Length: 271
Image (cartoon, rainbow, N blue to C red; front, top):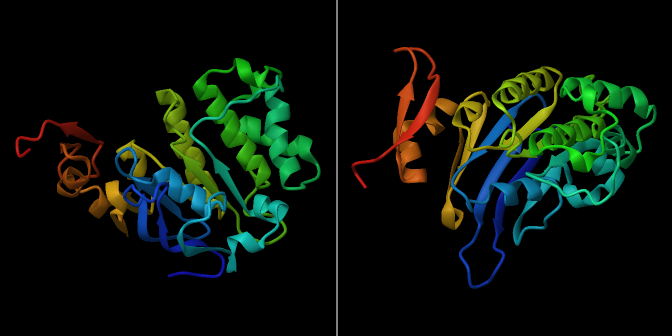
């Protein structure tokens, strides 16, 4: 059920070229505090576009986005930064800032004080304390992604739960696990669980169906603006449903009657 505490998109439609099909077409999704929503679908399905719309970084052609009951555009940049943080798939940093300085910019963007303790906690949360003084540009893709997630959490006043000022906060991440090694993929899932327990609302895109299965709901976005859901993971990740979206078959691996350990794509004889 929607609430004034949520971040919500309603009837979102968007296309980047009037001659091209819509990237999003009437999509609605909401994220409540303490809820995790996964966005899945093929390349070009609109996952990044929807996250940017939710973050207030992209104005859609149609539909509305609200953050804590107000239009997302009605918040000042600092107010919005204190309430929602967006982590892109990748980012290029032109200056040789240290990792600690880069993470601390998150707190600065939201006008937060006492940045040093927040930075230290965020570095520890994402296992990058040993990179504190490294120039951000020298990091690997996975290390840089963890630094970007730490920066976003620092921006939201985390770790430490929903903001001490009393309003809900939201983390919006575009394929956050894509460049992480297996150890840190597992660690990220644990961090997301911890943030949920602290009342943070989470929305992320992913091609890792095992990661999507840990979400509370899953929204499927396909080419041409088609979408399904949000649905419970067991429905959205049904092999037959996934075959329609991705054009390949899927096999469940795991114990009979238990949760699947993995959903593995396989050649589909029906196509």
